[in-house]
Length: 390
Image (cartoon, rainbow, N blue to C red; front, side, top):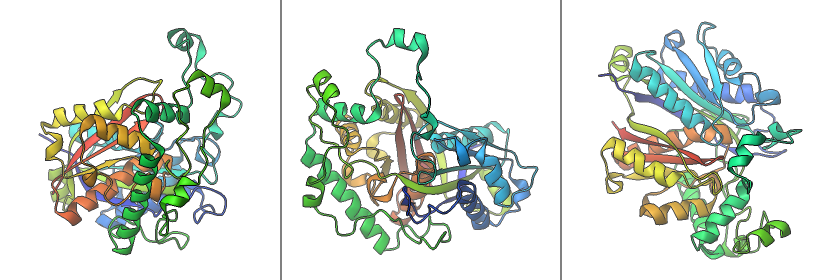
């Protein structure tokens, strides 16, 4: 039976996703091409053997529109014969790309696939694709959800309130994320996953090495709204720029093949994809699907949470991670051990495979066997995957 193994997993350092960020001058095509090229160089294979490139991008507009992955694959030097496509599953876009890559090699449709992702938030700000979109739902959706679905920040506030999480808890988690990322950077723990520097950026730009609880406590709420407060009086307005993910610029790429084909190519697999699933959940709370996704992916793999050595869950908001940990019973000492999106940054379409690159190399560095990654998605969905280090 064919399997799916990872033979390369790389990512750029993440730049701040705003004008003046270290990667703001890099076109998204060149940014994605940088990681694709690095994955090929890491393996040393003839790029002509690559069957397909699948890329994830969230804001598919402007420079990131019209199948940016195809242009990036060509910019990376891949033969014109290698096809490429771009998908949008919101924050899980590139994790879904990796899932499709695994499906393709397991099914025998492909032998070598690169799953990649990119987002240049500094050049294409989040929400740009919604400009002039007066109605995103149509008639039938509103008939099913006549109360409407709040925007993501309000969903995160509702989760924080309904799980009884305090501002202090959110800030404490966030400070720990920065401290873990700072320690990992100082100890060179990201070196194995980093591509060669791009635009002279050698490390993740958003880490606060001198962060403090006082500085986090002084930040104002990000989503306070009087009308929403009247509708949802339970909201405490605890979410700030300090306990939510930092928007970032970056790219990442993972090369997937089978054990047999890796042997033919002279490659040593880094990890095997044991299970990979997607689930839907309440679109109103929107960000809670990571809980059922975790249960489903463990069941598919025949494992328990206690079998998992390391976990990567996207730090979209500190409250999402803490609510997930409460419901799953996860040990936070195993979670995002080198920091997460709060400290490293969240380059949207690239974050799925960025997390994979971090998880693969962290398992190998720590001698772990099983790793789990999961990500919430706008719209009330989530991806989850379990890998086994080899």
